[in-house]
Length: 391
Length: 223
Image 1 (cartoon, chains in turn orange, brown):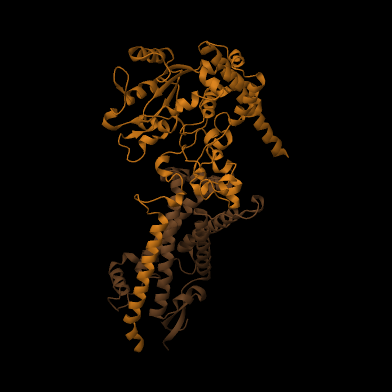
Image 2 (cartoon, chains in turn blue, brown):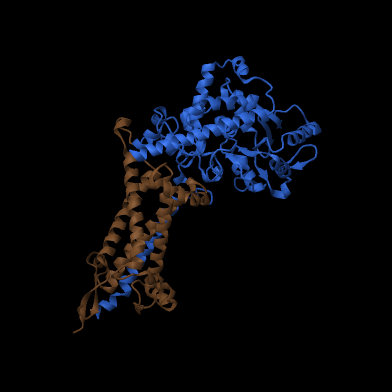
């Protein structure tokens, strides 16, 4: 009993300290951050988000960040300050799909409003400026907010030909040069999507441009929000954590925030009971598919993938790949284009050296050859060692 | 008087370890192939079924059993009171005998190689390979087991082995390597069983029964 109360005391003390730290940090941010352009609460009302919806969102986000409900007021406060955090958004070798996923939604929820009002000092897809004017904006942002802004990077960095596979802007700077310059002045670097986090599709075999992740190219520590595209909630959550505590969330060995990428898809999948029961979809559109059985045999890579898709879902919690009837492709994992193939067959059907040679086929042939060799050896041994028996 | 007498070759611990390992490996191969490519249990309600769950239970049970049997076997190789056989795993370093053994196996020569170690030169090499396979399959197996747990010793082991997972290229690759290793075990078993029968037939020392009784029959004096 004593040990238990000691434990409780320690925990509540730690919570008190964390809340104190959080409050003082939020006040400090209030003084130092640039003034907001629009008031967040008015903005929410204009977009048709009631106070009740906002509070519900606050609870969900606090829980998603693995914080106690005590932190809800602080999460709300951090959301109000969200639009004051200066962000420089860089695009490298990628498809802009992550920006699309974050900015487009069928109807606005709090996450997307946060992203709509984010203080983007520089964003190649969204900015009105072009050419030298755009370049000026970037330089001004780097000067005005040096050491304070968050650098968000979308896209891998090609290293081939000294980085010349990717040149951007009127001065023809390579991606490597821009990345080095901007990240050296930022408070933190957040890699959004599989390309900037782990190289993505352009780093898949044979990788002609020698594309690598931002972390590998520059040798810096980055927050890697894997996913193709990642869930907007994981991005807003990571920024909120930065606003709350002045520090980035704890990361796993691949640089992904543990609160979002700490558990496997498979373990929180709504179809998991069908996996344990032995009920599998055998082909697209069969009885099992209609009954929403497990997609393991249709190549679902949920058992090998760490992400919160099954819990948070996409498009305001509407759906996610498995719910839509297709297996997970493992897009939050490094090198998933190579390691997760074939995408619509289980890993057991992975081929060696292209073609049809699966491990099972090669293994069966080798076993057959071995058995044939044994039969021949047994026959020859019977002849060879027969004379000895007569002695 | 010299006669053909039983000589103790394998301790009871070694024999138990051998057959428990054999049992575990057979169960693991059968359940493992089901997990790799399961068939659907169509009849009945989902709530009444737990087939994949049970198969995975026995796979994990035998996997953990195999892990401890492996540790026990390594321990015996160094600290067995009957015969610590770690040196015998290096019988292949005797190159002259190694060549003799190959000639004997290929039926080129009828001259029996010397029996200086517990294992023959090729046997020692194969068993060393088996220990290496066991190490790898235990490593990949513990990673695959631990990935689904967030507490307990399984999780602690997983955290410790996480760098290996990253090195192999993620869980999918670990899973694939685990599958490739299964086939290495199947090939080993085929050759191992044949060679045991072959020795029994050619040497007539009772090789097969020695793993049950612990004794082989050799020319010599009674113990």
